[in-house]
Image 1 (cartoon, rainbow, N blue to C red):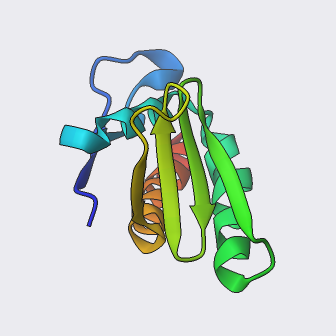
Image 2 (cartoon, rainbow, N blue to C red):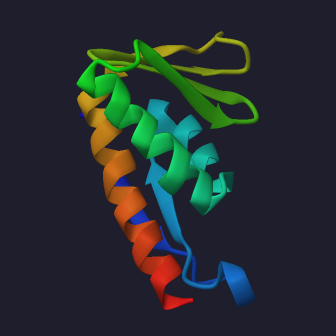
Length: 113
């Protein structure tokens, strides 16, 4: 299981105010870079493609931001940082769970704008 929290950005102003931020610890901290992704990208592209992988319509889906790359397969996910030197293999269900929870919070945040 990948431990995560979804916190609210209290320091932002304007558009960034109250933006839901993912927080990870230890070896998963590289995933916090996903907070830089556009909300629409997560909601409209990433999560639907993760659903397609789990349904068998796609073999894999690759996403991430800058130095963090996530290769999502139906049973495992490879998370790499800086060209794979520190790659982690994690359960895809764990990745899907935090992405789904974050996506739900992003939709709530967008509906408040």
